[in-house]
Image (cartoon, rainbow, N blue to C red):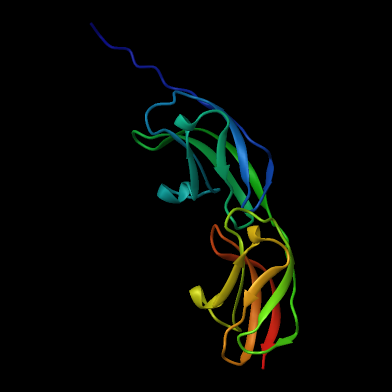
Length: 184
């Protein structure tokens, strides 16, 4: 007896826009096979770049999908895990988020300072201080999580010099605001 295969279908409903680094609800229908997932990636991306972040369909409807920290045009897709084929998609624009910092212009080496801030306050966001021009983990020689309150209390490095205080979105350790401080 011949077997007749039918294509599977899915649908997605998501907002047209979302702030960078936020988490959105995505309503979906689909086969919900073992390990199926919704992925978000840049429009035109191929291979594994099609999903910078993802949520498994097994976790229910709506899916909680983490939006990338970099603004731009993206697409959300329903992927069948077996061959990672996309069977539904919807476009979304990731919009920038803002933050501000209020820091003293100067401070003593090793001082504990209060840094006022505004920002998205996503889980694990933090305010960090590091030498001007530093990259990677050197950007935060001292830090405080935004969840600990406003103002943030940070102990400055012991070495005099020019430093920058930055608001980091934890997802990609992306800095969205900065203020200079001179340690002398």
